[in-house]
Amino acid sequence: MPDSTSRESRESRESRESTASSEPTYDAVVVGAGFAGLYTLHSLRRRGLTVRLFEAGDGVGGTWFWNRYPGARCDVDSADYSYSFDDDLQQEWVWTERFPAQPEILRYLEHVADRFGLREDITFGSRVTSAHFDDASGLWTVTTDSGDTVTARWTVMATGPLSSARIPDIAGLATFTGEIHHTANWPEQGVDFRGKRVGVIGTGSSGVQAIPVIAEQAAELTVFQRTPGFVLPARNRPLGPGELAEIKADYPARRQLQRQSHGGWILPPPVGLALETAPDVRIKEYETRWAAGGLAFQTTFGDVMTDATANETAAEFVRSKIRETVSDPVTAEVLCPKGYPLGSKRVCVGTDYYETFNRGNVELVDLRATPIEEIVSEGIRTDAGVHELDAIVFATGFDAMTGALGAIDIRGRDGVTLRDTWEAGPRTYLGVSVAGFPNLFVLAGPGSPSVLSNVVVSIEQHVEWVIGYLDHMRSTGARFAEATLEAQDEWVEHVTGIAVGSLYMQADSWYLGANVPGKPRIFMPYLGGVGNYRNLCAQIAADGYRGFSTTTELG
Ligand code: NA7
Image (cartoon, rainbow, N blue to C red; front, side, top):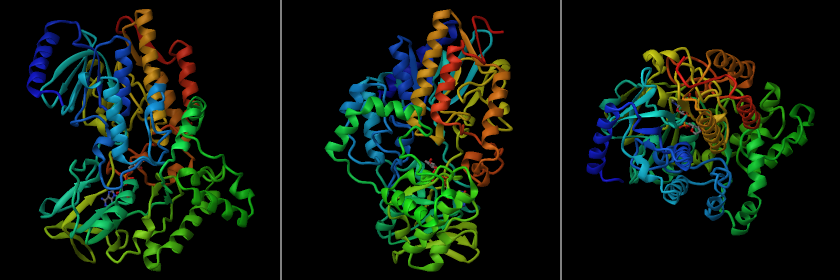
């Protein structure tokens, strides 16, 4: 942590300087010190630009700083969920498990920050509250909740697609006398659940990871489930030194494959089409992927994610596994996901998730049958009665993709706010630029592959593309860059055009904003695939940044 006294005095000086001159305090401001922000800071500095990064947390890591809940783990292979931009870095770092746990990813990002000396340009404990573009000076003024005010030519929002945690508005929440936690805002020192009666609300990826670990510690665990998910076994395991060495030796080819793949990671190819495969062979293939663990199950066959009937064969296989695993048939049935296609809500990857419901200290509450009425001082009341609790864990997710940006008062040309511009849903060009907001870049934003991909691969592509654009601007003397309205409209139409008619539209998912009451129902990420998207972005750059207005004066 920087010394806060010296930081304050330095920054009030910066504030004075920035208002006294039309020169910006910094060339660029970056918001957020997760995977995206750290790489952006590093890349901008390598160009000799002055940068200030503001981070709300007291350390680097972004998602992996905040989500410290028990069992938190990535469900992309560690060797792939890592930066590729520096070969020494990828060669020297030792991943210990197939799927890295939160502390290991956080240590990795801390190592990256130290290795490249990034902390000196980061202000920690400082949440950006506003970013206003000034038409007269052509600069952004960025302010934070700790009193910083700086100006910059460029602002890069590396605020994360899953960073605005949501606690649902349940009546009586404030009356609860026990502990309340959200998985995405977990205390650094951990939580001791020993001897306690714990309630977990939410069974998405976070709940699925936390529930088995909390069940081992708590005296009693009550799981409040609204929509059962499809939970695939992780089959996590230690990575042997030989295995990691083999991956490292092959990194150039592996990274290239990742970049050109659909999802940004390397999955075994589909073994044909489910609907053209005999039922007994189909089951055998599902068994093989189930035994291997991880997300590869979802693409056992090429038509699982495109054809509802094919999808149902995979869904039914998962349900058969749940019925086989969970001893109480009533509980098993409540855990069986029905009524929406596998994968249309984010598939979860877990360890001993279904097995946990065979424990004597775990109870499942089906909120579809007995909805939560209110939270009372001693616990949660459903219409079947009160569940007495000492602690409530909200694993209730995020205001995804737009929440973190919406929390900042962002104003572009003529004082127009991003909130108003996106009132009917987010509109971007390539997920990276918004018409009317010059020199503002969004990383892994709505309209890009982002959450549908190995996000580290998508982040690296976005950062490198933005840096390439800045290089282009500097070499041509251009000062302003923004999407044209026309290109943005076409892109939004393209993004929604791919989603409409896909299986993804058949579930109430956070991809669609359906988890946030009142949020416009728009499919936010780009379904076209990481490789296609990358090639398209490269082509747009080669075409002189087609669809962008790149100018020396504001038009
Ligand atoms: P998710 O996937 O949004 O899961 C949130 C869970 O919380 C989900 O089961 C929700 O049920 C449930 N939820 C939300 N609000 C309520 C209320 N009001 N009452 C009961 N249950 C509720 O968030 P995660 O943190 O697990 O994962 C987010 C992503 O992070 C994940 O997909 C990975 O990409 C990484 P619902 O399904 O809405 O009925």
